[in-house]
Length: 221
Ligand code: ATP
Ligand code: MG
Image (tube, rainbow, N blue to C red; front, top):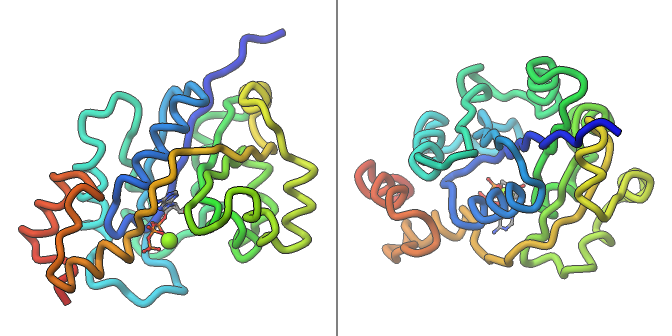
């Protein structure tokens, strides 16, 4: 038996702004899987969203501030630098190239993101490139989130599901695992709205991120 390899985690998001919901699932993934590293990857501007007032660089800067000094989370700006939107499948292929064919890679998504997976570019290839860990997100009932999957995705899920983190260390890609995480009903949308309405989002996100938002007058209109 080869020694199990510590997986590398990949967590992408708009992070507009990053908040404790994001940071907590990243930390719980690191601890549950014994990750050697987690790439935190702010997205470019997705085509299906209105161009945000906050720039990709500002979103990345807030994410950088949030994880500064963390021993295993690295801010990965590849999607921002590439200028324009890029697909998760391309980012995963790039990371697969960098880490080689054997290293287990684990893509972390919230349940709300995972149930929409069939809408992602070349979604079936994602399973060839990485494992996927799905973190429960408040709002989707803890067991009922699986009902929200379209039939084709449910079938992939059932073929690939595993219930033991060890399975994620024994192969480079292809398994799916649900991870029960501390439920924090926080969203970037709610934070943006609070700021807009003159209410404080304090204690929903790191103080250094809040300071950045205030200093740059983000989300006020
Ligand atoms: P928005 O409200 O702008 O959509 P968001 O809070 O959903 O922002 P995203 O950047 O869209 O944040 O999410 C990135 C990833 O983090 C997604 O996979 C999403 O499911 C997950 N996520 C976001 N917030 C939470 C949370 N509170 N608990 C668990 N997962 C979360
Ligand atoms: Mg979202």
